[in-house]
Length: 71
Image 1 (cartoon, helix red, strand yellow):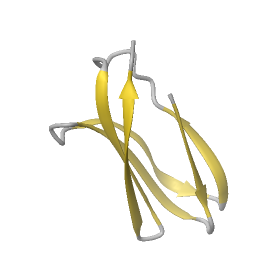
Image 2 (cartoon, helix red, strand yellow):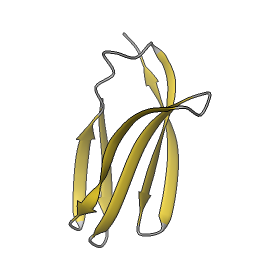
Image 3 (tube, helix red, strand yellow):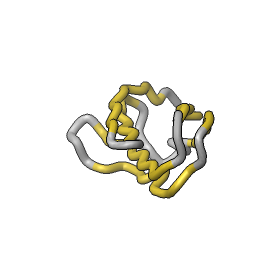
Image 4 (cartoon, one colour):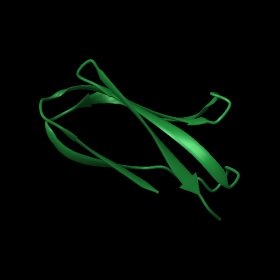
């Protein structure tokens, strides 16, 4: 699964995936990135099918979205 996001300015980015219990499943990104559009791969082969949340934090703004993993 690819997760894409756009940054209006360069800065620190954190992208984490959680299960519905709120447990961290995978830390996908925690680094500085340049402004622009970025795509990060979430490899769910070791995870069970179901709903997951991903939380993107950049520039002091946090966005949380859901995704469905189907095998």
